[in-house]
Structures are given as C-alpha cells and as structure tokens.
Image 1 (tube, one colour):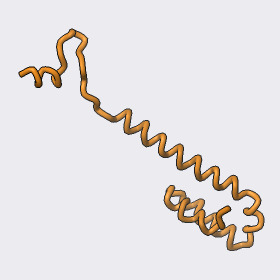
Image 2 (image 1 turned 90 degrees about the vertical axis):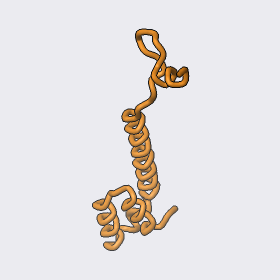
Image 3 (image 1 turned 60 degrees about the horizontal axis):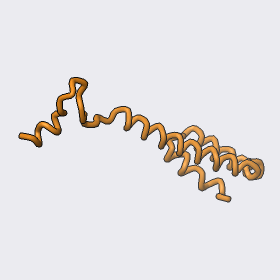
Image 4 (image 1 turned 180 degrees about the vertical axis):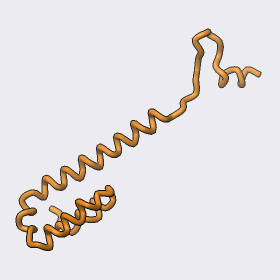
Length: 86
C-alpha cells in the first residue's frame, strides 16, 4: 500500500486539486488511521478515474478524426485513388 503522501501528486496530475488539498488536510488532522482502512478504495478510484479519462480522450480523438474516404456512393473512385491514377 502507498503512504497517503503518495496520493497527492496523482490527484494533482488528474487535476483534482480540491481532493488533493482535502486529502492532505485529513492526513494532517490525524485522519491517517481512518484512511488506512480505505486506501484500497482510494487506489481503485484513482485508477478508475485515470482509465475513464483515457477512454474518453480516445473516444473524442476517434470522433474528431478525419479519415480519408475510400469510395463514394456514386461508385466512382475516391480522390486518393484518382490522384494515383493520374
């Protein structure tokens, strides 16, 4: 298990600054013993958030990507094929 001070950089990297400061405040107030029981939950939540953001990023990139057209509805060749035929 990671010590609580190791979560702060991960929270900052995910731009969860409010959670990072709240987590630091809890550990400073002696909440370390209470948080020790739920460290697995914090680790899993951080991993899930990181994976979710990665998947959303890939989905956004795929949605906004402009792939070349290979055929048209009229049956003619695409611009990429016609440029090689010339």
